[in-house]
View 1 (cartoon, rainbow, N blue to C red):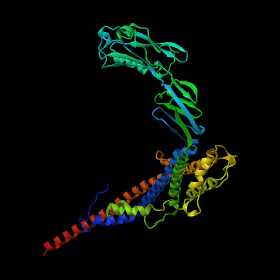
View 2: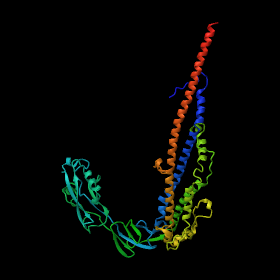
View 3: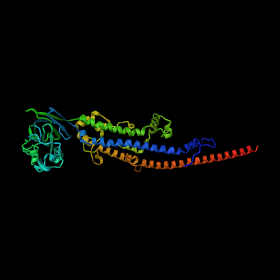
View 4: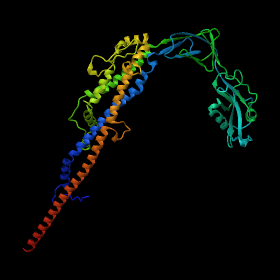
Length: 494
């Protein structure tokens, strides 16, 4: 570090002079920092578009590829307290009549008496032997009762043992202690009669029979649901039953002779709303890309240096940077061609063998105003009519996962969005990308190297200026000393 002598001999404001000299020297550095900031803004602009594309691809396109988007069904029930239902796209429209005579229930056994042990203290301290104990539950795979085991370890409480039983999902039971009745309860985790009228839970060990008072406990429940569907008797292990794409849920038994009528109808409004949600998301994407290509570019507004920011308020900085960022991606050929490809997606015919081969047949178009970037416009009446008359062919127009002329419009859009995302990722990377992994990052890294080298040069230049001024100060100081000596000599001889 060069010693800095600030005008002691000359009286010159050396600091101010060198500061001004260095301001001129720093102009190329300011330009490089501004260039790097512009690259960061461009990268961030690309990433905002990338994020919008990713959301479109991950959520909106995903929803548009589901058959239920185009062929939603609604089921109404005349007695929802007893039976409700949902329908898939394959369900036929029409009426269903159901009477529910019995609900499916889980099997349960409750101890015959209060247990004589503290459920929160170690069992071995209460005289209960450690080791394995056994009980049985019905196994569907072998179609027979299967012995289950649980080990009582030293220090285990009753609650610990019951938790081990419940945590083992293969047991198909949950076991717990009821604080109020002070009894142990075993209950199957599934509804239905699996043992054809026999017991679902039995006990082999004295620990369960005597200690937990479960010997002689009467099993309750373990029944199948029983219902009459359009005059035919059916049973179900659970309180749900699916047939013909309709899933019926039994909430309660019906009064004798009372029938629940359920009607399955196409829900055109729901299908329309789901498609409109996609349209709105797509138009937001087009607006964002189109704006990046049409907003004005203020070339006189360069990124501010730190020195410039010091003399400005936060609001002034915000307004300045708003103009400086405007049009930062304008004229980008990757984005303009990508926008063109998105628009082009909707024009081609789809040779799918269905009723609808072009988008306009279902009331959707990209509009007449080319300047809007190809936003989608919807004829509500025409789209709802198509969804009502032939939702399956509307689906085939949008979704047909094959190559060539038969490829669906949504599949083609997915391809275009994927290509755009790939191009942006190569240019601007992701939030997790290093500078080496994308084009703008490599340019920023190059600028970082140049900036670092230039800062080293500036330091050398500043030190050189100080050495020169220090030399001047020293020369003036010597001259002053010589002058003083001469004056002193002349003065002494008079």
